[in-house]
Length: 330
Picture (tube, rainbow, N blue to C red):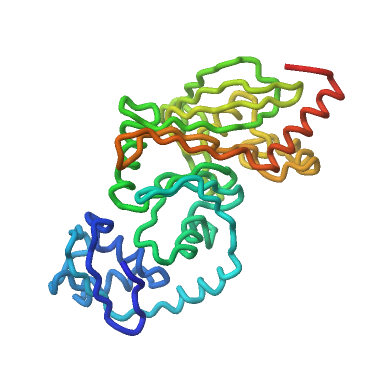
């Protein structure tokens, strides 16, 4: 769909990328900056028309529908774009085809605006690709995590990815995604391979901040950890997600007594200050690899993102210092 005009009526033809979406959800997406109450008001008053007729906010749009959107005041949206004019971030493209886009997300950037973040990866990509008719996140990464992030360029690809992640995917019985992360933990990890099955429960603190803890009341969560390198004070692990719970790797490791280096939410806060002075300015968690069935083609797709230079450099300094202090340890 094209941009909504603020001065004149917009007529839009619904394509397969919008097929099945609720009318209110599509309007809220296209009319960012317009108060939600006003969007609902223009639908209920009949100013929004589908094929020349009134439509309920819950109407599911169909390919070929003609949508009429009246003139809208979007001053707030213009202010947001001006305020975000300085937002510039390099988003390396790992893989791209007609239905799918894979980027290597930098740490410190949210995947989308909201919850205190005015701008995110999806907004940056849409600005960099104004001609893109469809671009939506297929999954999420924490703000502090870097690495592989998938986006759908077609609605059919996006729905296939959502179905895979939800039903057949991470730990399910169908053909799913094999997701691997690289993580540096504080402590000397001993097991070459360890299956961790600890249920996770989401809750809100008094401040309203979202947190997760291990609890029998939580949802099933399964992570496989493999030892890659070990020193006296740190260990480098590969984490394989078999379920996709919020903060799963971070909470599993913290609960086991091996917090992620630089984790400001579940980590060792005193040690993090020392690590920051030593050059680790972020959480050491990187989505390094994903192997999955292509959402639109009958083939497997492997995408990889190298460990960022800042993390590689920190590991090298850790190894050198530990060798100096303790000798060869593994």
